[in-house]
Amino acid sequence: MGYRVVVAGATGNVGREMLNILAEREFPADEIAAVASSRSAGEVIEYGETGKTLKIQNIEHFDPTGWDIALFAIGSDATKVFAPKFAAAGCTVIDNSSLYRMDPDVPLIVPEVNPDAIDGYKARNIIANPNCSTAQMVVALKPLHDAAKIKRVVVATYQSVSGAGKAGMDELFEQSRAIFVGDQTEPQKFTKQIAFNVIPHIDKFLEDGSTKEEWKMVAETKKILDPKVKVTATCVRVPVFVGHSEAINIEFENELSAEEAQNILREAPGVMLVDKREDGGPERSGGRAVSGTAV
Image 1 (tube, helix red, strand yellow):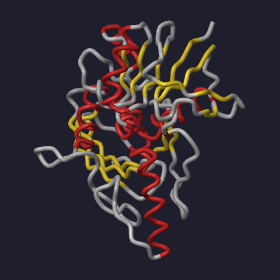
Image 2 (image 1 turned 30 degrees about the vertical axis):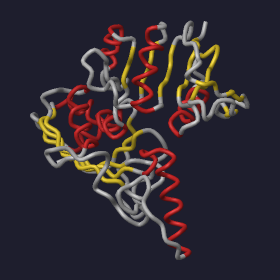
Image 3 (image 1 turned 60 degrees about the horizontal axis):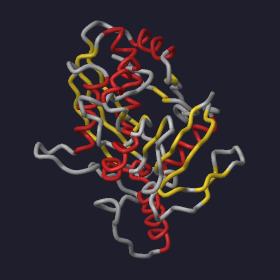
């Protein structure tokens, strides 16, 4: 018997990707419901490449009773309203927003890293998903931490505009087009022009001068991986449509050679090791690609 699954925010970039992955991986779902705000209610979207279509339902009128899992991609404000309602109805919420990530009663899960923490969901019937940059980093850190115990991580991220949703992707496209044809354009989603530019500012600035995106990487890594690991992060938005990159420097407590690190990463779940030291550089073809040199 399969699951009854709800995708909340199904018309957004993340929601559509959730539907694509459910279909691609042939998740055992007997029924899929696509819900979103009243603005999208009645629209029809595709369920991956299955040929099936789903009609968008208004989340305000949707009854979660009898549904097993709800994948939330609706932002923190809407999640604050609807997640408790779904959870109380017995539908387990897996939330993609930042709302519950640091809640002590809500587990923050990356399956390849801390699957045992999933038991904590029973307190609230909610599971949190970490920030995108944190998620890809801890998948690579976990097997190295198990082998040689990480003391400190210094990371610089190069994050695509897809992290800001459809509005961010549209802004990069429109600004790039405007520059080529000589039109004027003003930033809307980002604080500065993003086309042909890099912006060392993601989310809000905090009192210590860091941004909230940088704080997320520090706090979430500690919660997921190990509270004793020291983390310093610099997060930069780059004019790329899809795909985040990171440069990570790791200090270990125990000695670990470059060859040993490569062998560990080569066998790690969710990681693809690329060590192509020639013109053209590493090519990514899926998974979380890791390249570079350990010292």
